[in-house]
Image (cartoon, rainbow, N blue to C red):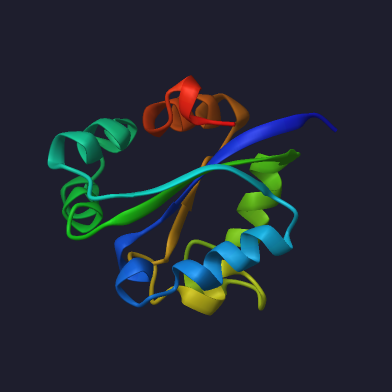
Length: 139
């Protein structure tokens, strides 16, 4: 397997409920190496730019509003098969359907406030990591 990078976002709901440490612990416990991490409060243009792929979807405005309501923690992660490994660690989008031991089962509230985001492909991971971490900011 190849070494990959992926992006994780600890969403506002998880930050508000002080779940940053618990989520980071799960990430480290899954042997995903943290290359970069910082807390940011997304502006509307930043959130709209990041989620532009969903612009035509009915949930876009609600998603942007949610992602700008408070700080998030963005992480650049690296490991063998990082994208798939992190997606498995996140669990199902709806925390009610997520497996025990996943981030969303432990820290998500519902399908909208599900604690975290992760890149869905190696190609999107490159774009997403670059969106938040210019090359010089990632180890």
